[in-house]
Length: 245
Image 1 (cartoon, helix red, strand yellow):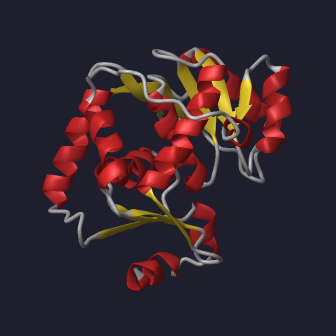
Image 2 (image 1 turned 135 degrees about the horizontal axis):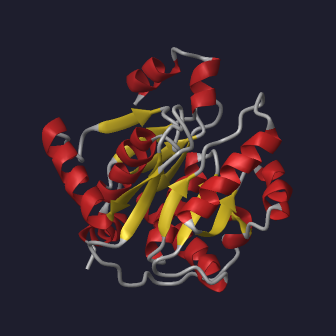
Image 3 (image 1 turned 30 degrees about the vertical axis):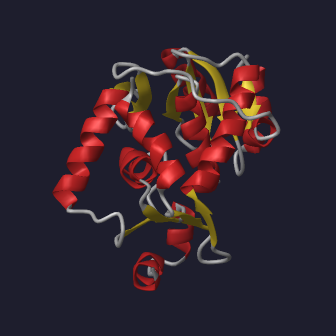
């Protein structure tokens, strides 16, 4: 039994909190139950694609509103998540595709889940023999219930930056995430009923993915999540959102 997924699914059913995305243009709030129900549909699509316990899946997506249910869906299937490094407008796509293919081979990925704004990468990945699934397609599936997962199952393979060589994958288990999440909330003296988390950190970064997406989803904490591009367009945005929420 995974205490990590058990508590995350229980928080979805019992918490009234949720995740706000879309700032500063159009704020949209989804409760954690709504995120959970979307995850069940994505999990249905993953099941239909043959993704199951022990499989590794890469994710190339930019919107937190899609990353949250996709991550939860992978954990529902007993699979592990690897957030792939994202190309920027100045990235050499051919070079990026080669590096990404190396990462996909390294983690032995069953598939890669892709969504906006990276759909242009789909044909490049397919040319290299990668099985590509889109969030839009996965959401059309019938919902499924989570499979049983264990404490020592792999939940996340976090990529290192690759600044001194090819990125390496750090294996993080369900037990690891549970222990870190509980310790972080104790250390921060976080009050789920009154406190709000606000972040612009990217989800391919461990602090952005774990500290400011997975952990609030696990506890059912209120989260306001924008993207790094939102922050770069207005570096005062973070302070404005802290003040607003």
